Length: 372
Picture 1: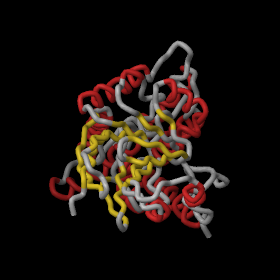
Picture 2: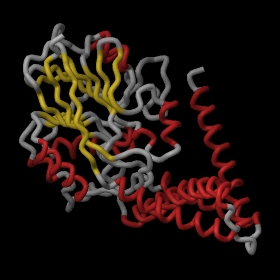
Picture 3: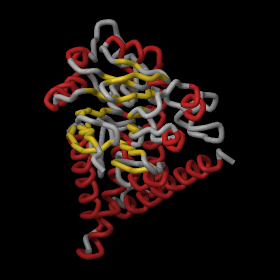
């Protein structure tokens, strides 16, 4: 039973892709009648299939050819999505303005170019979001930066890592919490490259837990990289900073009845690990976990705050709506009984270097005493 939801999701996605291909092929045959509809169908099928295979087969490789192939795949998927959105938008405008088919075709292509350019610019523009979370038991304010889903790899490297560190220094926090997916390929694991050099210049504690992409890349390599960058890697461990008890959890299932394609089915569970840790009672507890999952087990341990990422809030419209359905906690601040939950949209992207309807962000969290 626990697999049914995932099977239904995959079937729905395949049906949507097939419908999109038929829809775009019909429109292109109308816009550009010199090319038959069958050719458009096979062209879109080839574009999607090749782009998807490029991204999946070369997602974690370190060699330059594999990196280039992955980038081509990511751009191909971006064009596929944005052309679909452009054709839909032009169809809507056509209800009012009644364009001739060739004009509709040119408008669709032009909008695709504009959306792709905007999507790339938006993805590489990291914004700072500031929130305040009152916590019971805290006696003095703590300024924390939350970063997640940096995704250093084929689309991001030292320049993006340096940019994040510059923003952290400008915010001057007391502590940095990093909830994983720091890497999504081995492109920066070469002996001559120090992609995380800037992180060693931080003068505040930096706590890290790994995510599912870190696991795909090779969690031992990622841990080595993070420790070399002076991060404290928490592997189902408890650490202490000022008045905070910090529980860092590996990327794992909530319990034995759960299924999630983003973690191994035979992994430990949040329920089991939390029951096995020596957690001090009546201590202000913050949990770091890559995915916003296992919330009720954290609440049972009187956690005051969960920090997570993973969702990217869907990253690209219209997947933003799908993300809302997939994740109980998709983006922003939530409350579960007495526990606060914050899910960041992340500072990087997966598969394609674009964002539409979401933003790349790092979070400044002002943890303040709850006077109620």
